[in-house]
Image 1: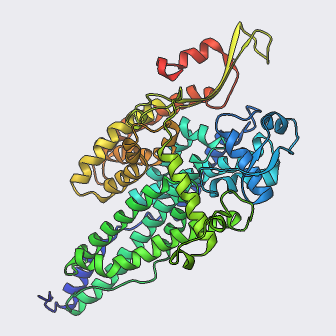
Image 2: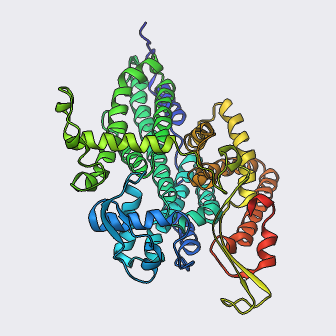
Image 3: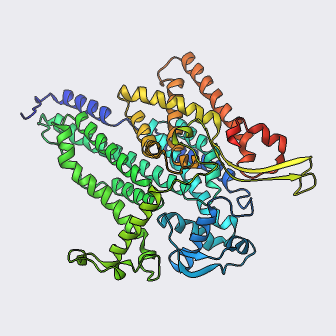
Length: 527
């Protein structure tokens, strides 16, 4: 049955239209200049923590042994090649003639290594060169999160607080100073989340204007409008394609974020008073959302393999030529059949990875810092390497800042409660956690590591800031209520900052007395 609206008087229609606008889209903060200056200042803090002495340690640490050399190989040949046995030592000595004339099977897509290679292209094949792109990705992630927090909470202060907490987090710092893929993956995931937030606001603003005209004219809402051109959705799809092109775990994010934007669409149509919001969203907007997001992601992912596609001697590139297709398979281009086979081999590797490792952990241990990962550790006696006491240590430990992570565990419960109370912001934060953390709970037998959680921490930080915003209280609360809330929230932030400063030396390989290093090992499983 068609919904109708009685024609109101002009003033009544105007008031109803204003109510609709307010219900559909809360206004953004008016401090537009500080809305950029604040995040950029927080980004500057992140840059200092990530870029200063980035070349230390002057060695290839942990999984840099794969990604730095693969990045150099992609830069020189367009694909990965095998390398000589003593490649690491030769590279550190300045000898880059380390590759064999034989392709190498690598188990992650090319995007992350392409970005690492750009740092090598500009600064050379040394620790700073192969780390700088990842470090800059970490800085960009901090700035993005500050802007996202501003939009999510409609507060420049809370947005900048989110950026600051991410800037000082220990795991984020380590993963920004090490040439592995997860920090790059986190940047693309956060960027996609931000794009969808902008799309949500723009779509709701358009629904508000459309519905306001209908209400003012006393017309029926009917099935509502269909907004075909939504560029921020396409941008989100591109970011998700780049995420999948960095590591396959981006696929979980595609699924969860896709569902999230559908739920946002249903909510917008319901708030606008459009009839059958669920059915209309699925049948009218759903196909457009699928094409714009999934189509953009798939196209971006395929383009990311262009170096491999153009390299006739890349691993598995000639598989299709050596394995003639069936009649139906002949319709598929040979490069695509070879790429499909490559992906089958990658899938087989990832699902069969069950080797034991000293620093492997289960995903449920990540949130409470059950088993951090030591990327590098060295000890020195008096007089060695500048050690001025009986014994010194240098360490790169991938460990989150404890009060931030432990506080985030409580904040996630707060978000869960407020999501049940229909606060969409809490649901959005939980969607980010679900996309980046929950899938790893399934892989109880696979070899996985805590540092994968660098993609989770931006959303955990948002959960913390959401809870701190509740503690501070609404703008119309009494001055005493706000003062108490600010004191509690500010005290917690100061504790996080103090802890971040305390642990910073063991994140960035600073030389410290052994006793100082041991004092930071609060639990035996941190060693």
